[in-house]
Length: 114
Length: 113
Image (cartoon, rainbow over all chains, first blue to last red; front, side, top):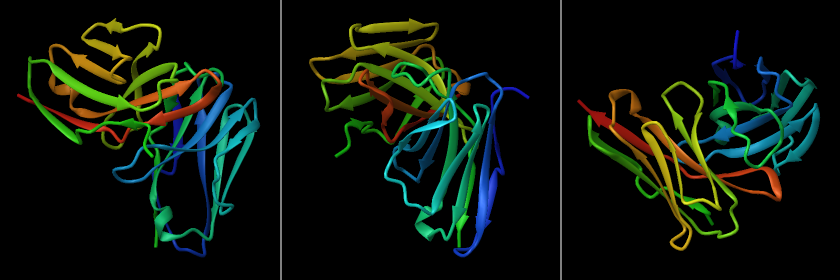
């Protein structure tokens, strides 16, 4: 496989459930990101990891918990979510954390919280 | 306050004609601008970028123009093709903030045959 792969593609969960989103990149990049895209709104940066170290936690509620075990894998652990958390969650990677380094995105996980 | 604005939610263009997608920004300190394209059920893909020290960058059918005095960015696609139908996002970044991209809300481009 090449590029950035996200699983699952779709997820429906209740507010009391615990689930995890997975992201894997096969590009040899050192930086990985989680973004949230809500309908008709700009992409919102959630978390940034550089060489497995978190460099940004963009005021994200604690019900979202990231994990980066190595530079190729990124997880987003979800628990006690709210219906307003329903959105498209996008994972991305880049060679380095750099202002002019284009991001490579996965196809996203469409999350619905019921 | 949205620092990067794409004021047209959608745009319809005839195949073969020029498509012009616009983006306005409020912060004159942005150092770099990028355009991404997104098809349904896929993630955004990088298209073209421009540094704030330039006013034009061209890559095949795609040209980005930067007008710093007007704080305006535009993406020209010539000629437009059916495969260009997608949502286009502009984004801006600062040198001092290595990872913080400020995104527009996107413009949906529809190429009519």
